[in-house]
Every structure is written in structure tokens, then in C-alpha cells.
Image (tube, rainbow, N blue to C red; front, top):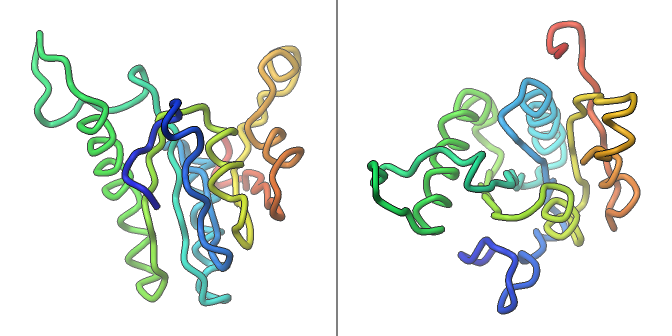
Length: 166
């Protein structure tokens, strides 16, 4: 993976994950955590590495450690803050699967585009579903639906269980 995690003219797409890897999207939701657990279980069975992708924007990213009122943080500082939050959030599950290699990939870009690009060469893409449904789902389109339609690799959409219902 490269260190530049934004889509721009010099880096139009993030580097795809390795062909043996399982890519999983994680936005911090219960559904994403359930999908991450499923990805880790599959990775343990297949001896595959996992690449966790979180798309972020200035509005959704945690404030960087250096942030203070009046200070404008750099994209690198936001990327570091997102990565640190991912590591902290997923720590418990990662520890349960200590033999699985995990890489964290925060990307400053739309979620579906990021997941589709990074999973291009992967063994599988795993995503959760929030089930927007109805009119909102038709207007916005869901990330999981876009991934199913456009990903080059197989996509596993992990639906909520009663314990993870949202």
C-alpha cells in the first residue's frame, strides 16, 4: 500500500490489495464491526491477510492529536488520526485472531470507490449493510450495493444478526 491515501491527479486510485487478501470496509458502525469479525474468521481459516479500509472526509474523521482551535490540520495528520482510531476500535477483535495479519488503510475518498479500487485484485471484499432501504436508499444508493455491482472480486455482504441489529 502507498502512503498517499487521497484521490487526486497524481494518485487517482489507491493501490490494490494483494491477491490473497480479504478487504473489509469499516466505518465504525455495529454492522461494519460484524463484517470485520466475519472477515477475520474467514482470513483465519484461509491463512489470508486482511486489509481494513475506512473512507473518511474532514467531517467524518476524528480530530488529529495536534488539532487545536484555529489550527488547520494536514491531510496526513487526519489520516494518522483515522488510522489510530481504526486500530483502537478493532483491537479486541484483532487480538482474538492473533495469527491474522491486518493492515489499516484510511482513504480520503468516497467509500464505494475506495473499496472497489482497493479490492480489485483481492480474494474477497467483505462489507456490512445498514439497510437504508426505501426512498433514501434509492436516492443515495448503498455502498454494499455499489460494491456488489462494480467490484472485480467476489463480495460478501454481511447482514445484521439479532445481536448486531441496527
